[in-house]
Amino acid sequence: MQDGDELNALRAALRQVAADRMAQDSAHDLRHLDRVWTSVQQLAQIEGGADLKVLLGSAYLHDLVNVPKDHPNRSRASTLAAAAAAPILRENGFDNHQVAAAQHAIAAHSFSAGLVPKSQEARILRDADRLDALGAIGIARTFAVSGALGRAIYDEADPFAEQRDLDDGAFALDHWPLKLFRLPEDMLTEAGCAMAHARVADMRLFARRLAQELGRALPDDWA
Image (tube, rainbow, N blue to C red; front, side):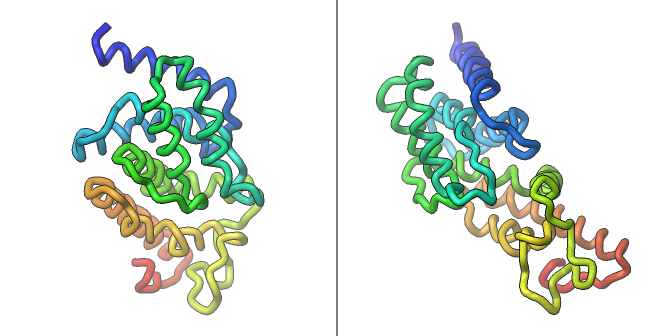
């Protein structure tokens, strides 16, 4: 097989593993993994210096242990996923170096884990995963996750938190300025940063439309 055929076969195998073993929700499902893989390839092509096989393994196994966002063990999810991924990677032809590289990328991709990505693959995976929290899909995922957790879309009295502290534990929309609007500045690749800024611009446009529908003026820090 050609390299492309080998990657396609490996992708199919790892995607099936994820389908069988990953606890899925509407924001962390096979389609999320597919989108991350697409972004990973885009970033790798622009940035260079990355092993696509390692990126493929880490893209499809990075959420192998999916702990709910409101769970006390959430910060350990990525390290647990990295440990669970190792035997799967070996079974699918990854050598020891590739297994270690994929494990590091998986462990370091998480926002809550607080680990520093030390390889190009880890930097690319982290950026790709964070890109999926932004833009049109990011809007959808914010409301899907918040709805599943029983949170309101916005505070009826003060939707844009002009006179109160932001609280994304109560209101979905608060998650944007509290975390998501800040992600472009935290990207680790130039391409990822550019893509993130473009996606945040789309979210700000949505906020403007929402403000209009609510009959309110959008605060400057949201615009």
